[in-house]
Image 1 (cartoon, rainbow, N blue to C red):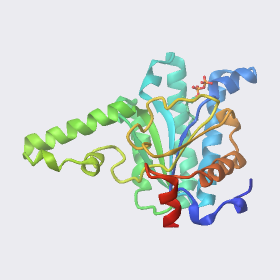
Image 2: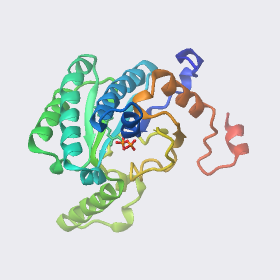
Image 3: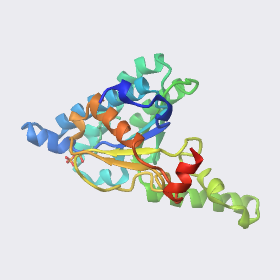
Length: 248
Ligand code: FPP
């Protein structure tokens, strides 16, 4: 598939990606796991460029889950330096191209220098109006929902309000993704069919796309194939096929 094969009127606004398979890629090539992550960082950069090229407005990359803190210390610290250096270097020119960087997750758990470097790029790019790149870092979907509940309880304690007014919209305003539309498409690489605690609330109606490709091998063409596949799904949101077709 090529970009030209896509329906320009049906480009997803937001694509979320579980970038899986760096470790297996390294093993397959007889390399250290961190080399797999380094190749993964290159693939992440390419995915951001493809998203920009296709006119996608938001891309969320699952870079480090809260559960990933349990990996061996050397892998965690290697990933932290890779993330900081990738973000600090690669984002320099992306920012010049109007890209905005956001992060979601519990950044209080990040080493101080990593947090500061990332926050500096977030601040520097905050006024940019092009593609928004959201990096999920120290992220857990369940934790996010618990935090949102705590936020609401705190607001209630400060100034009691009518609890019956809490609905999905007001609840979602307390998630990390308050200002971000839900992803229409979620891609997971490496042949695993799991969500792994990613964006649990936000993917209620996302189309899920799984590919065998290991993340470092995920190319522009693979991304286009995923969007093409998405464009050929029927999104019914609980309605019948007939209802959807009558509306067209
Ligand atoms: C999953 O592969 C990948 C990760 C835990 C890390 C993802 C990080 C990157 C792609 C690098 C930097 C990203 C950005 C946004 C600059 P895995 O290690 O679980 O692979 P395996 O399942 O084959 O072992």
